[in-house]
Length: 251
Image (tube, rainbow, N blue to C red):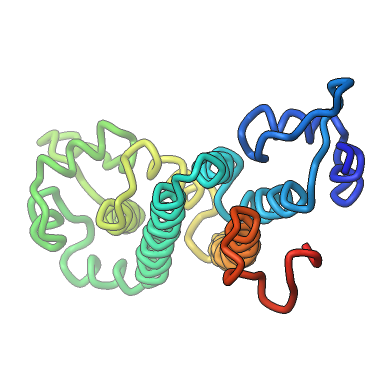
C-alpha cells in the first residue's frame, strides 16, 4: 500500500500519513529499493485506531498510546487509557457537584426569605458557620473575586446579601468538586451576568452531552485499538489471536 492508499480512506493528505509514521503513531514502513514507503493492512489498522482514539482521549494522549503500542509497551498504553478514563470520571464528579450547586442556588428566593426572617443580611461569622468553613476561607474567596460583600459604613464589617450567599454557596460546591479558585471565578461571573442560575441550564446540558460523547468515543477508540492489538499479534506470528469475524487476510 502507498501513503495515498491510507490517506484516501480518511480524507487525509499523504504528508499527514508520513508525519504519523515519523511520530511513531504508525509502525515504521518498509521501503522499496527506490526509497518509497510501503504500507500494509497493519498500518491501515493502526491509522484507524489512532483516529478513533483522538475524539475520546485527545490528540496528545492518543499519540502516546499508539507510540507505546508500537514499541511493544502495551501495559504503558493501557495505563494511559486508564488515566484518561479516570479523568473522565473526575470530570463527571465535578459536573455533578456543579449541577447540585446550581440547583441548590435556584433556591435563592427561599434563602432570601430566610435572611429576611433573620433580620436581612448576614455577616461573615454566621455565614461561615452555616457552611462549615472558616471566615478566613471567605476572605480568601473575596480576594480571588469569587464573592463581593459590601462593607457596613459604620463598622466596616462585611455584609453578605442573598446574591452574595448564592455566590458563596456556588464557590463552596465547586471547591468540594475539585475546582481551583481561578476556575471558579469565571463561572460565578456568568451567574452574576445572567442574574441567576436559570440561564445556565443550557450550559449544564451541553456539558453533560460533551461528557457522554467523550465516553462513547472512548468505547469506539477501545474497539479500534483492540482490533489493532489483535492484528499486531497475528503479524507477530501468534496465529491463535485473530480479529473477530475474520482472518489476517481481512484486515
